[in-house]
Length: 272
Image (cartoon, rainbow, N blue to C red; front, side, top):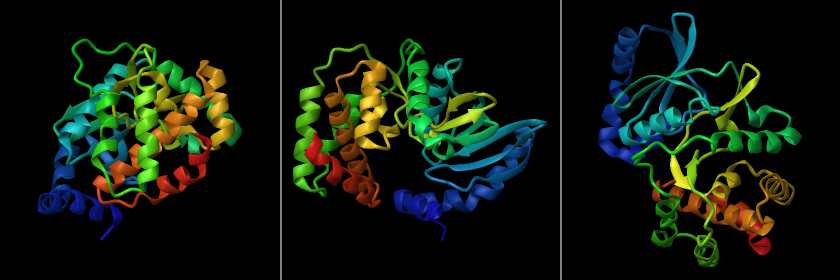
């Protein structure tokens, strides 16, 4: 069984298995409804089944998700970010999302590493100019951070530090914006001559929460971010650690190993 199928079955049990079994028929029907062709799954599947293809001559991405609510929130976030550096939503139905495909689609992960942090900051700055849609139902970053209080199967000294930093730094009165929520390098793609984002989570919070995901070299990149946005450097580093722990907590909840994030936390713990 592929890692993607294993993940879906682990998260959703028998219902996930049935959903997977129905995928070929489901894809065939969608292709007919929306006039899609040359559909092929992408190589880096995660929580959604993602295919690239065409609608006529237009390059597209088709996303299918068991988690209909999560996919719907992604569509709302992409629409809110339209015109501010995000791919466009072409069609949407429950559990189904048709998007424009970035071409050539090179991710920032495979780009010039020295320029990646600057590009990430520029993309973030543009995204955060998007107004929060009136009456939006996006979750708040405060709701996300409550996961630090739910999980216990993580080294306690890490959790204690993360909770302390969260509680101290959450008093920040900066203006809240719509955050991408997962702005790592693989979610920033080259589209023509511009960089655009994919896969937003959609969450309301202060801008500094966006930065941790694209930090690769802890000391160098956090200092660059601090200088670019005029953030206190230690706040950038502290939130980086808090979000490492949040990601580790989510992995534990999803029955996925948190080792990657715990190893990074081990390196940065003495510095925050």
